[in-house]
Length: 161
Image 1 (cartoon, rainbow, N blue to C red):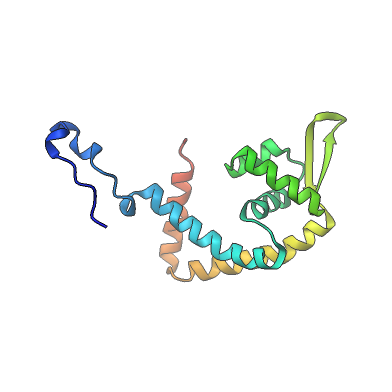
Image 2 (cartoon, one colour):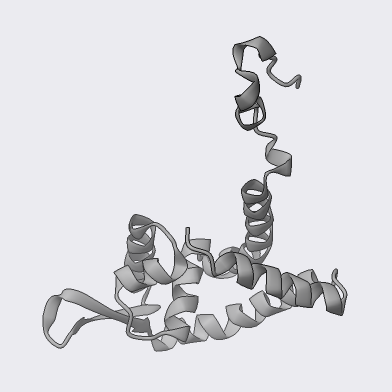
């Protein structure tokens, strides 16, 4: 498909580079998103088939395995996922019996979430699958590249968004 043509004269010269059509294939946020989606989907294909578990549901379970006793709001904050998506995932996980929901010290406004015994059983199957996919992905890089990737990701993630 031919890129959309726009008259250069329509854009003031001092603004031209910033207002030119965005080349997504070279735009870092887009490339990171594509990579994240591809890697996540490759892992998700396995656990979706086996457990009918969505990517969002698995991420919620993984966070609760690491940090038991969070509220739905805290899960959303830790994952940077949409609160509505987290709420839907939690509703399905509670309904499936993989996540338990209790109230915090009798305060009905705040839920305390954790994996149930059945949820831990699912986690014990899916977490090793995820680690295997990660190892396969990182095997494409040599040791120095893996170290650089870790440093770069840490640096980019430490910035405020």
